Figure 1 (cartoon, rainbow, N blue to C red):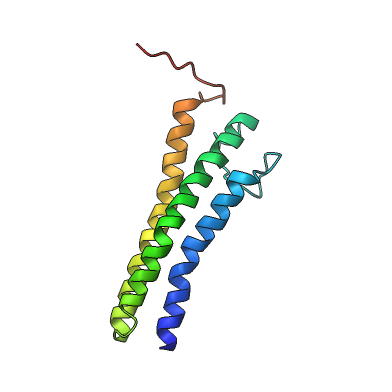
Figure 2: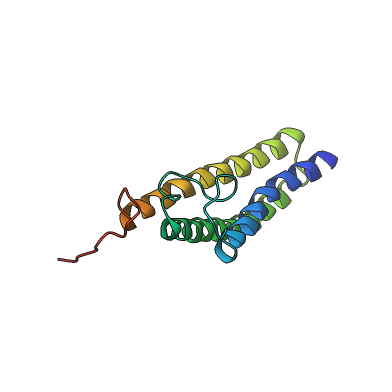
Length: 130
C-alpha cells in the first residue's frame, strides 16, 4: 500500500502543478520580461505584447489540461489500488508520461499561436480575411 500511495502522489503532482502554474500565468503574469521566470522563448520575450499573450495562452492550456487530467489520474490510480507492484507502476508511469507529453505539446501550441499572431519582430500581424 505504501508503494501505491507514493505513486499516487507522484501521479497527481503534475496535474496539480499545471493547474497552479497555469492559474498563476493567467492571473499574475510577471510585469517585466524576465530571463529567470515565466514562459521564456525568443518570440515570447520580444516585447510586452508577446510576453503577455504567451503567458495567457500557455497558462490556459496548462490550467485546463490539469483540470481534465487530475480526475482521470485519480480515477486511474484508484482502479489499480489493489493491483500488484507492476500494475501500479505501469499505470502510474502511463499517467506521468501523458502529463509530460502534454507539457511539451503546450509549448508547441503556444509557439504556433505566437507565430500566427506576431511577426518575427514581435509586431502584430494584419489578419486580412479574403
